[in-house]
Image 1: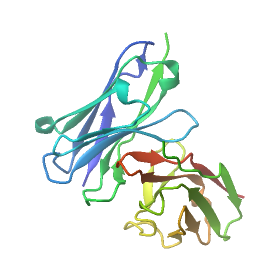
Image 2 (image 1 turned 90 degrees about the horizontal axis):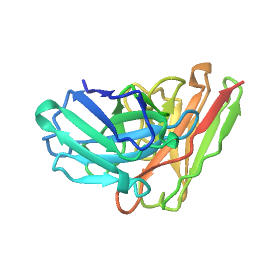
Image 3 (image 1 turned 120 degrees about the vertical axis):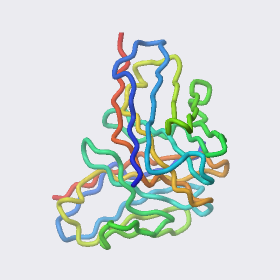
Length: 122
Length: 107
């Protein structure tokens, strides 16, 4: 059974860097085909894909946020970390991590974490 | 950048059929996926590869693709189906994109 859980600060100040950790179980990110992604959702708004990291350390970023995002993995700890620099109130959102299907050539998340609400305010 | 367009809202009466569309120029080339999201909860995959249903998803959920538009159909809508529905796909660079979401109201 695959589970994921996000952790990190619930409140950050403008200009600060947000660092979120996704701790997962039920799979290994060192296994061929595995990947974990991050998605966010501002209150009352749409889902927005942020980043994805593959088992081989290949990384994909949303073009609109690429300059501010960094995704890394720690295979030994079963964790994926997302950093988002220069936070602004418009970055207030629930941040989710999710497991990508290992089926090569198909791009969907088959398991999601519960999400964590991050508020940006001074 | 690539965009997926959904209607903001769809309303149906219980027992009727709800159809939620998602349009995008890349949909003839990449599969579409659908997620259901109830208030305060994380999204749940209900359709993958345009029309496949994950285990545990009721048969009343189905998907179809007609080129640049994909459709999520819920046949015999139940009150519990009231939720936001999000389509998702990928562009030619394997970057992911979500639609704007559709709020399904069961009258």
